Length: 278
Length: 248
Ligand SMILES: Nc1ncnc2c1ncn2[C@@H]1O[C@H](COP(=O)(O)OP(=O)(O)OP(=O)(O)O)[C@@H](O)[C@H]1O
Ligand SMILES: [Mg+2]
Image 1 (cartoon, chains in turn brown, green):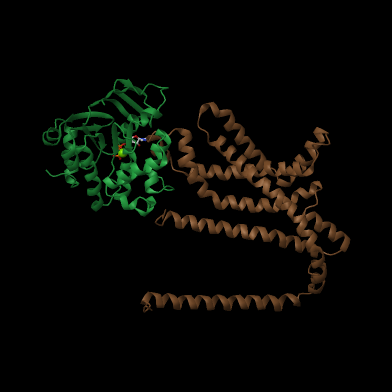
Image 2 (cartoon, rainbow over the protein chains, first blue to last red):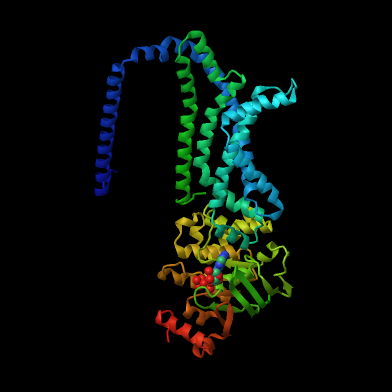
């Protein structure tokens, strides 16, 4: 049975049509402006030949994509390690027991110290320094130490994100949990952390997106991942198009990651303010 | 259950908040704490529940001095329930899981059993249809009833209620007070801090008037409200009457 739309529904439909029309018009205008204006710039031809050579793009994209799998692998083992050690450092920093005072100090020094140095320097320091110290063939793998450097650096950032989350949970939540007889650890585990982690998902995902890009820094130590591959293509072909290919590959991961964050957040918001069906 | 306080003292920095409190609460008794804002009612309740450490004094629960520094607080806290002015429900858990959490984690009750028992408690307070909702979908009155159910799920011997209706719209106060009446009927031992004077008069066996960290005067409600002894008690009650919280 077709129901007559309500006055509100008719108004909303009109509004929706209007916004779609406005959005379409403004997007087309912007696009046309770019398409017409950019080719008129003086260096357009040169840049197009240097960065957007279709043939080179097609030839190099396959090898680049294979090299990019290396980036993904490094990301795939660094991310969980960073989340775990970041959480451990955050817990150490927020520990209240006096017995854990040295741990608290160490965690504070760590986060402050590590964040004070650019990530790329950590890659150099650990990636060249540690194998240099060890002087051992078996332990000289650059990917191992590159990954370690990423974990060392990013743990500090992620720890601060977690700490902010933990401290944002109001004291009265702890009081309520403790008054029910939950121990300090149980309170942390079942009351504080679930709320803290939910609150910091957006900044956490931001850090993961930057990590996904900073994986390319490991190439400074030698491993041939996407960025390094693109570099060698650039040298041999005297063309920048491979860089564009590499950029596209990174975008293929970071854009969905960002969208996923938004989606998770939205779902969480709906879940918290809607009747749960279980 | 028998609670006995002697010489309880508590300061925050140089500010003395509890200045030698003596109080006895017997099994099934309902004691109301009244007094102006800042007189130390909340602090006293938090001390009894060991949420604040005492500076000095004795709190005996069935002869055991629970204020003994160094005594593990968790086994004692689970014997004493507390309900807060601002509900303090856990926002990430459904109403049902709010109630079932402590029995599951503290007493080790299997989840399925804990949920059934939680649902029974909720049903008792007319909240069965709210079980699957998250707290922020409940009205203030419903949230506070859930908070009471959550405290009761641990089967406490003593329930501390800290101005549990102060954050509620006037029309929601009644449903929460009904729950307290119901608890009194069932013989629950309770200490209430409250600004609801009419309710204190109706429900309590004894009323204590707190003033600057001391129990200045205490007695059965007819006596304390009908024939207060101290000038400060009289002045407080007159202010309360002026504010429309108590009939003459
Ligand atoms: N954590 C704290 N740190 C410092 N001062 C505090 C703290 N908690 C309470 N106080 C102070 O202790 C005094 C008593 O507070 P309390 O909350 O016990 O009063 P109350 O009788 O419950 O008042 P109200 O009726 O407003 O709830 C107040 O002056 C308050 O400022
Ligand atoms: Mg108070």
